[in-house]
Amino acid sequence: MRIEKVSSRQVIFFIIISRVTTVISFMPTINMPPANQDIWLMVIISIFYSIILLSPIVFLTNRFCKFSIIEYMGIIFGKGLGKILGLSYGLYFLYETVYMVNVQVQVITTTLLTEASNFIITSIIIVVCVYIASKGLEVYGRTSELLGPIIIFVIFIVLISGYRNVELALLLPIYKDSTLLELSQGAIEMTLLFREVVVLTMICPNLEDSTKLNSIFLKSVFFSTIIIIFPIVFSQGALGVEQAKHANFPFLTYTRLITAHGVAERIESFYVAVWIFAKFIKVTGFLYISSRSLREIFGRGEEKTLVIITGIAIGIIALYVSLKSPILGLGSFLGDLSTTLSAIFLVILPLVTLIVYFFRRKTIEKEEKLQSW
Image (cartoon, rainbow, N blue to C red):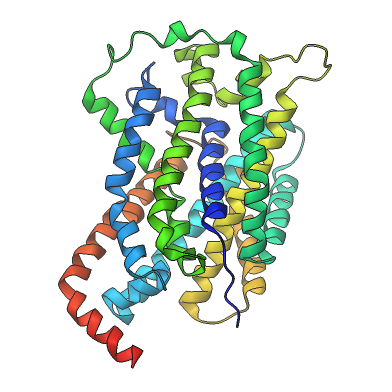
């Protein structure tokens, strides 16, 4: 059976777009500490925290580059406990996918298509994402590589079009109303938004060159963070620091302040199109790794069949949750739960796994040598 391969460029574009779409959706970062005009500074600091806090999971993925995180949990902890931990990661992937679908449904039904039902919007999202994911990793990688530059370009066009509404003086004074502790706390919370690193742990065996894993991680963290700063600064500069914090969708509000001279329609339509495509890329990526994790855990089922089954399950759960918990984002129960789970599965559990690996590395290396014979 041929193993599908993706390039480092394709993975980098997926991670960048996935991270950026979180910010342009409901911009959770502006409510993180210090929650003032120094948010952009906190975002820059988060680069260093991301590298430090996520280094255990990146190290383990490098060490076991021929295996997914589901598989190497079994190698490190043994079949019994490894199976339980692998299943836990699979459930975490499913939860994050459900959460992402809910955010997309909320934005669409509350701001764009207010008369549309949650059922219709959820169904469309699931059908599109299942279709893309069922085509395989290579097709998905090419899609990310094709749409990535276009999405980034349009975002900057939207930003530039509204620069006249931006008052950078609102972001002054710098580092007067914040403390290093507040900036660090916000940077840690920002790091926990970098959930796309789990995609690397699942598709590392499919990289054309797995030795570029560190490069992919560092480039995606750096470039996505730099891009993220601009929507934050422009939204705060146009709406005001306090008003931006209380807006449900700050960047969407920013785009609605823009009118393209000589054009009847607002430039908001460009943002909406870009956001929808970017969100499809993000949800599809997590849908793919969710279905793949289930296949590796239970050791059965064809990829396309599992993608469809997983997609339907996610759609049903997302629809139920959207009707029961219509308010999402930072500060909501689902948003806080997502942050807590990210702390466990991205930082704490990988750190524990790394410690266990160092104690068992000689035994693991012996087992690997025996298997290679």
